[in-house]
Image (cartoon, rainbow, N blue to C red; front, top):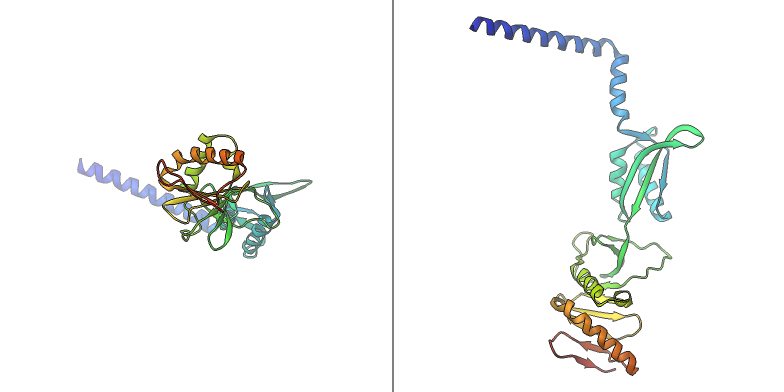
Length: 253
């Protein structure tokens, strides 16, 4: 029994050795075959160096072209898909990209198409410098000459990395939906520089409404009622403090 097992093992080992020698010989003495196989593997990761960028603004397109050009200088005939995606993700205004080979129109040559999804701003943030922020809190620069009809978020603390904590901002936005109407759209400034309170300003007045950060849901209804009352009377205090339950302190102009 032991001899049979040993004999079987020797036969298997010999077969594996012969197979390895055959493969080695093919690749050693058939450079054309070797080049074809390795070329196919490499080409699956490469893209044509001619680039077409779509679905983005001109400033973002220019930024992306610059980084793609820097990659193309290394290999003027092709681009690496992973490198293109990594370079695009390094541009703050870009949320994601789709990279693929496409036909070059009348020409049979292929081109690299980069379809861009830009970040959509939800607020203008002021924290020593003005910039935009998307729903995930990622900061990016505004497009020169573009008007953004968004609330100004005054953020006192330093942002961690390139992101801003939008927890309080989202609480205000959610509570504003319950209040209804154009309440949130009318907010021109949300000041969360003090972690315990939120100061709101509206585009139609200079009055400042202060509520406790932990009591936003219950207080926005009161803010709306007070704004309607002041609008009817034709006068509005400079500051209305609603941080205390059952009380409202006003500061006249």
